[in-house]
Length: 344
Figure 1: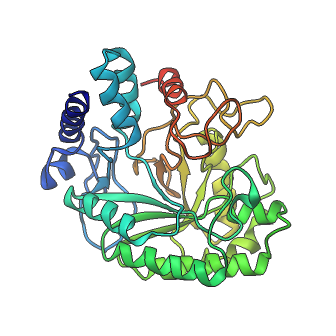
Figure 2 (figure 1 turned 30 degrees about the vertical axis):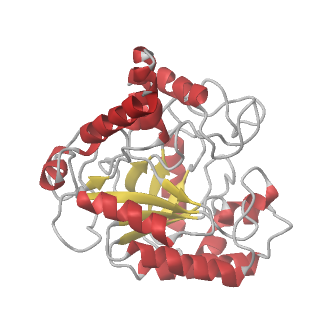
């Protein structure tokens, strides 16, 4: 009985989040190509359209995200106030991380669902060999050949549907900072392969991850590694993924790096940076007192910043630090803290 009621609540939530329909959602959500448009998810005009058309679109919201399911469960059990706070996460577009051996089916499902709503999926390719240098998010493909095959499957899943793809968070910066298990030349070649293969899909914008402003303050250290990794063929680079640096710091850092890369554009992860970085130990791993940041939007007001995105999914653990579950697992109490500390 409880399961049935919960399922009904999820269906209702799905209707609220995505029920505007195809053309209705495009109008209501705000969009690139429509001057001054704003919508319930804060999406506004973007840069050059990925298909060269004067189209209206926005980022897709998963109606069955962990946050949406959590809000539905809490409504069912009478935690109405907490459910309303959780809606601050559930009603915002967030990236889908592809970090397991099968990629095509999930990519196809997410981009198809987005396309039916006239929206754009945000995806993260996260399967590079020696991922996270053996730390909390270790894993990835067994070898270079396996990774190239995985990228091919990912690209096939995209088809011609619109998507923003963030390529391999930490992969470049971690190599530059020093990772004994990685052969730099091989890693950069694999990243370049991923960029080139994904860019063959006509609706795909590709952003190669470049760390964050506090990790490698000297941007000159990133220029050659990013160049070897195919940044010239990408739409740009991504900053602050899963981190907490303020928008102003990321913007200044991105502008400096862009100048060294011939004017490349970039996107910023704003999912958890509402209170800026934590100043204690292990500041990157489930730090307390953080808050949701700027809602996802392409209306950034900055010519080089293509979008603010929620790439890290708020409420998913960074790892087994501070009592958290394993990396990527849903942690309701942490999600609630992020939402409660946010400015709405």
